[in-house]
Image (tube, rainbow, N blue to C red):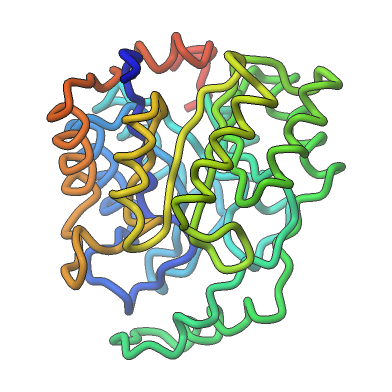
Length: 310
């Protein structure tokens, strides 16, 4: 068992789930702020943040929406704010960068390859749909490519990383994405230490099978060694088992309502804090410790909260 402290990331609302899927999904700026603050108080060192239109719940890139909750989260927690550059599934790359380029956070997510990001099967489930856009948004992913070209990745690193000191949660949905990251590391476009978020269970990416988890971990070790901080997130019912396994293997974890709406099979999670508390309890029950925000900043060599533009 590795004695390294475990960084808990929490993805507060995301751009996958829609309002009709759960009454507990944070939508308005106040809901996002309160949910993020609760997750931080429960033990999340990193808060992964998206914005939504408060009237419709649709994922939105507008920096003015971020401006309604980021300062409050910054004031009321010491957590690392990690803004999405993935945005929502209908946004252009430039729209996805509007918020991060205004606020210049310590961290941003960075998707490491284009993919068929498919969530259309969710549209056929008997949710209590609230808005006309929800099912159409989901069904549209049957014919959708989530764009993250080599040029896109390099421009994001240059504009946010090289110019402003932002570091990244490198989101890898399949083994090829790890090799894409290795390409940029070899060219010194991306420099260590860096957080490698291996993602399981999204249709179009690698499935949530134990053999795949072991293979992705072995590939991260072989390609990056000590340069990488390895983390795991898994969608849906695999969320907690995969997170627990990551912690036991010396890795970090991500939970949150972006990744799963449930706290256990058949029971909706009432908050992000509930999920953070559950994984924290599992981690500490096996003798591991969670990292504070200050310790996570040191592990990842972040620029510090004072250099965020709020």
